[in-house]
Structure formats: structure tokens, C-alpha cells
Image (cartoon, rainbow, N blue to C red; front, side, top):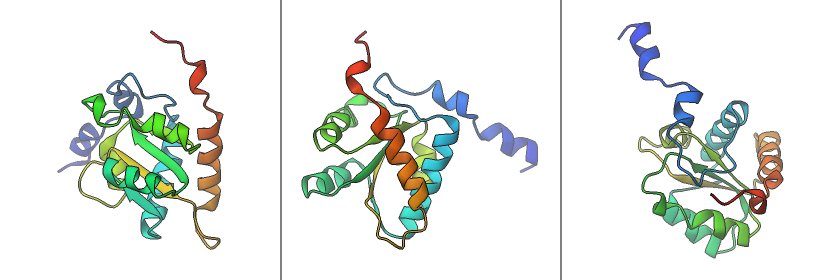
Length: 149
């Protein structure tokens, strides 16, 4: 595979944003998406992570807190449509990223991942600054400000 072929296979951030579904708010910016993927990699290495809808819901039921990262290109939407409401009830900040493939790769899995919950890290966690930045961005979103279409 040449360098040109590998560039054609990888999509740009803007191309990935075209594939997101209608409930993907707040969608992370390009810079925030990179930070989110970096945080997911570090959290996966430190085992501070829950991957997938079933595991995330189970963790929320057990009272785990942290920050959630959801993929925006999930179809059918019903797979994750209940998660934003559940996260808001539990006061857990969340953010959408454009690609489930990239989220899965960052979470150290070969499969695409629809959502991850990064649990509150211990004091010696390497990515604490990334975690704090993502929590701040997730808390800035006000779901009541979105106009109903």
C-alpha cells in the first residue's frame, strides 16, 4: 500500500461529521475529538474505562461516575438514544465524537465502539488534564437550549 492509498482510506474530520445522526449534540470539535481519543487511549491502558452500551449502562446503574464519549455515526439511532437522557439524570457530562471506528481504535479494540464511560481516575492517572478539559466541555452543554425541529 502506497502513501497515497492510505490517505484515501482515512477520512477527514469534516467527512466524518457528515455521517453523524440527528441526536449528536454536543459534537466535539476537531481539537476536542483528538483530546477525547487521546484520553480514551490512556484510560484504556489504565483500565478506567467501560466500553459499549451494555457495559456503560451497567456501570451507570452501579453508580459509577466520570465522563461519557458517544459515537455520532451510530445507526439505527435507537441503539444509543436512551444514553443522553440517562447521563443527564445522573449528572454525568458527555460529548459526541464523529466516528465509532476511531472511538473503538482508541479504546484498544478491533471493533467499532458506540460509547465509552471513562471512570473518575485515581490520583496518579497520566491524563488528568485531558480528563478535566473533557469534563469542562461536557458540562458546558445545555440540553434545554437545543431547538426542537
